[in-house]
Length: 495
Image (cartoon, one colour):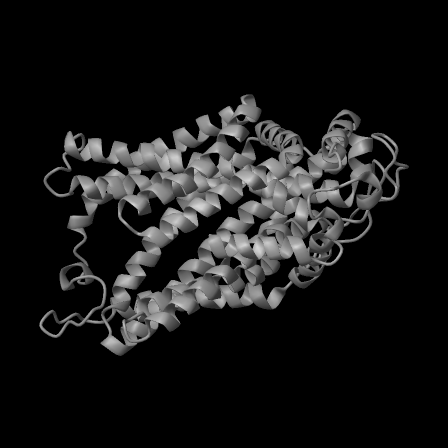
């Protein structure tokens, strides 16, 4: 975290074209030469969306058939999935000799196909998963109704988290870590004071994003539906990984590495299909307003899972490779190469964060304009050069309230898991430790809330990208919201 903060300061102080924004001295003439006052734009033709829709003002004309993008990566993803199926089939046809068994994860009994010991765990996951879904629905409602206090609570949560980490390390006499987190907490306070004039804009964007999601609840249902798909794939993947242990030790290591990569690629693809679908829905709302299709979420999902699937697989592949390398480096760590491994893990962690952050905005370009991944990456790079700092500040302000929800959900579900096992609610106390209940509950709460916050985060990113690239469209479709956003965005006095 400290390293990322230093990198951010370096970016803030040295990025070309952003020196005028060094201390958030954003003025109308620096950011947009055509801006004079809210409502002062002259409408201009809008860019086509890549799926045959060419926006010119409020008009939409269907002039060309949609095209599939990045087809080789869609094919590669399918081949990879077939390889996983092949591993499962080969494992099922392989006999297990427990006297010679040399698996690297599960015991011979489980690998042989006896899952009776896992049934209590499945019951616990089902109960706590349902609780996590209910918590996520309530939290999204609170974000929409109490936006401003929730954002300030999220800022406080961010600062208190750093202070809490400093106190924790201080109590355990880890002085260097305590000092680093203490300094980081101080920097966070100073940072939020500097960007305080951006908070109103961030609040308005979050409130708008929450209202859009509330208007199109299919986006939230789609995210929840992806949970069941992920659980189903996780069960299939886990069973395949178990079957992979039936081979020799060397083969098991190689297959396990491939399965780790497959796990991350599948989960990234599913996550980004949801992201692109939500972004497409929000972009439709942004540009079309009174000409909304009957079911914009379904239309966006169809595009994401067909025409843009190759682009999603391409971007997800990059993140999956980095995450797999992180796991393999962690598995290979030892005392002999401790320093090298620490450096490698830090570098891979930074690459992982950069790739995911860049993809988050690149996939908005894929959703809005139907671009290939390379085209979307170029457009995102241009966006970052002109509005990257504003995007980063906006995300920093709102990240706290989103992560606060994830933390609270994990805490509540973890505590519930402990009580369920301790009180023997499902007859699990004889087979599961209460601390396993805590772990399962915390993971369920964490993962479910992450998906729910992803819907909000996708909506926020889409509104920001559309607003940064095409303000006139919002002026035509929603003049009142346009004026409010313009007033909060440019209401930043010179320091």
